[in-house]
Image (cartoon, rainbow, N blue to C red; front, top):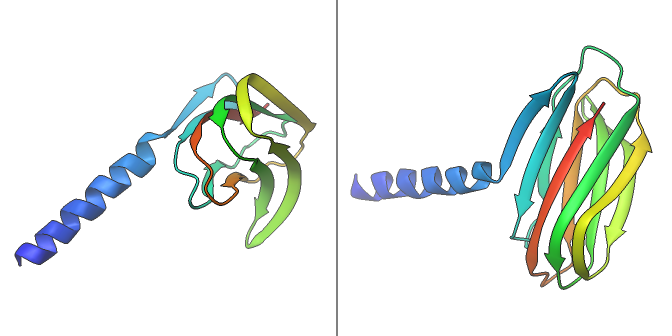
Amino acid sequence: MKRLLFYQLVVSVALLFALSGCREVVIGNRSQQHVTISNFSAPAQTRLPYRTDYPSFLKLRVSGTVDKPVFLAVDQVDGKMLYRALRDTLQAGTYNDWTAKQDYYGRGEAQLTVTGTPGTTGKLTVTWYTQ
């Protein structure tokens, strides 16, 4: 019984930390997320929700420092299929409002995946949205 309670506590705390780095804000007609990533041992993923209207572009803004390259991928999610929307790589270094912008007309969910190379350390804050 004590072991089960301990396990539930550990899982709850882990979920709290995992979800605290991602916050979604709706501004006007855009859904925007701020994601802070400091653990690059596994790919970090987050999704923007389905939209009722068609956006015209997708924008990423990144600030922070990493010591090894980090790969950024945005895909449009359609059921179990992913359609490439944007790909870019951040080299090792410090970034202050680095921006990538891409034409984007999908109404479905959009998924951001941030993947560090093995042993990557640092911290990045990514703000992304479709509008």
